[in-house]
Length: 402
Picture (cartoon, rainbow, N blue to C red):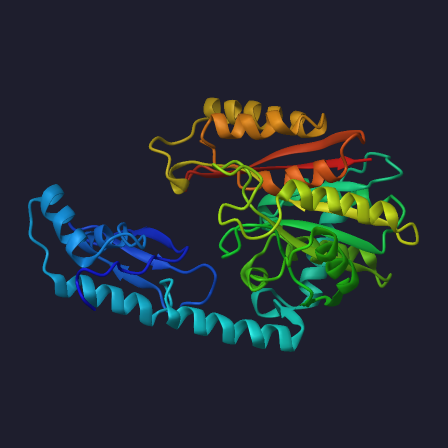
């Protein structure tokens, strides 16, 4: 490739520092979406090159910056070799990746199913685990839940909040349709992403309400499925599906899986790339469609975690009991704002702090509450999953909207 041409941009992949690599630090490049077949190891020079793969730098640009900042001349060949290796591993926004993406998307749509059975133990083990969670939950005596906030942490760490959220839902009238709002952690879509594929899990198959999804798209005048492959590797919806399958105990149900974008960036609730509807309009369309269908009972669920803090997530200093109490205070303020439907302030608080505690689910919390605005809400439980040895702490909650 000519050195004057801009190099392709890096896809959304994670760079993870490797431990015990001697004097020179090394990094692993991990594609959480599952497209890349391998994890790549990088030297510090490779990491420097990677940081400039944004679609706006050429080989020559990177050489100039490397020389200016590190006082070392970097040859062109290592830059080109790294770019070629990244492209071969589908980590760049290139025609090769687009072709692979189109092929996989076509296969996914033809199959009509999202199958996660390889990632979980057999159905009996999972059913027993989740049944025990439900039995341990403290129900609030509520009789009509219309919206639910539960974690998307793994069941071990998020157990107390899962237990109270779903034990409460278990004691309310059964809904035969659940709109599940997840967080799009690693996907390509920058707006709301739907799928019409059924969910195959170790507990059986759950049908997706295709008519609801296509009707929602018609109401919005836009497709929500351009990037529906984002659902394949995303866990925030599937964890709610498992809980619902145990809760259903054979009763009929359908799901509407939606992944929500981050709403606190420069474009707010509108997609940064301009593709697709504003998240605010999606929530309003959800509310209208649910209200218009009086023949079915629908519950909205947000699979939402809150803060992610500690050195594991990039904090400079380890978290102490005192700092975790401050995190709890900040989290509870956000939950209170959601409960009171003060959603603009909710977004402003996260935005104003530059999301220092890495709240990952502002989008689905916003969409849930905006779709059910005006209804009373109650916080059932706030929970911190702490790991002081790894300095890795994630917070979550169980909250209901009536």
